[in-house]
Length: 362
Image 1 (cartoon, rainbow, N blue to C red):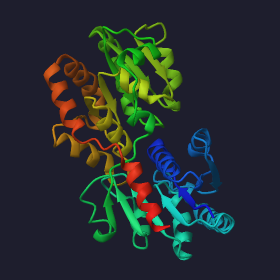
Image 2: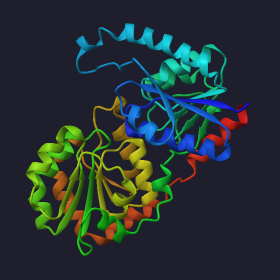
Image 3: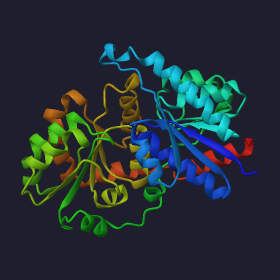
Image 4: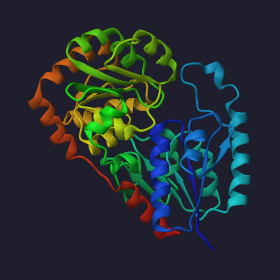
C-alpha cells in the first residue's frame, strides 16, 4: 500500500508555494506516495496546485473578516459545512498523515484528523504563530517552524526548527542576471529594482512607487513591478510608454525576477523573507501592518536587527520609500553589507527536512 498524505491550507502564495515544495520533497523521497491538497474554494490554491501537478479538493470556507463584521454572519454555517466536507474527504482518501501549512482551510482538516488519531504536522512559517495553528498545536505530532523562539506558542518538545521551504525553481535557480534582464526586456547597464507586494499586491507600496516613478527613472534605475490584480490596470496606464519599466499583476517565474534584481522592495511575509535570504538581495521591507498580530513587522525587524535588511513603515512609505530606494541604489558598500548578512540566514533544505520527518512517522 502506498502512503497517503493530505496537505491542507492556502489563501496566499506564502502558504501555497511552501506546501508545494513539501509535496515535491515527499514525492522525491517516495515516488509512490499519494498526495491530496485541500484548500478553500475561490482562493489562489485552486489554480496554483493543479498547475504544479497535484490534485486539490476545495472547501466552502471563509476566514474571519476583520474589517466588516456583517460579512461574518454566515461563518458558523460555512465552518459546519466544511467539517462535513472534510469528513467525507478523509473517509474516502484515508490519509496516513495530514500536514497543515496555515490559512483557514487547514483548521477543519487538521481538527478532523486529530479527532481520528491521524498524525498531524504543522508548518508555522511566521515568527508570530497564527491563532488556529496555536489551537491545533496542542494535539499535533510535530510543529515545524521557520524561526527560533517559538516556545511561547507551542510545546517546546514538539518544535523542530526547519526554516521555511523555498520553491525549487528559486532555491536551485541557475538563471543569470543577463538572462533575467532579457526575460523582462531591460538593459544590462542599469540598476534594477524589483517591487513585489506579495501574491495579492500591496496598496501602500504601489501608490508610493507610482507617485515616485519619475524620480526612480531619473535616478537611472529600471523597474520590475508586480502590482497584484487590484492595482494592475492603473499601474499599466501610468507607466505606458516608459521604456525602463516592466509591469504586471503577477510574476509567474520569480527566479528570473530575482536574478535580474539589484535591489528588492517587498512586503515581509515569511516566504518572501526566506526567498530573499536564498537569493541574497539587498531589500527594503514595507511590512503589512494589518497581518495577524503584525507578524510581518516582527519578521522584518529580525533581519533589520542583524543588519540584513532595511525597513520602512507602511504609513511612511509614501514619503520615504522611493527616497530610500534611490539612496540605497547609490550606496554600493551598503548593498554589499546587506547581501552578505542576508545570505548568512539562508536555508535551502527545509522542504527535505520536513518530508523526512513526516515519513518517519507514517
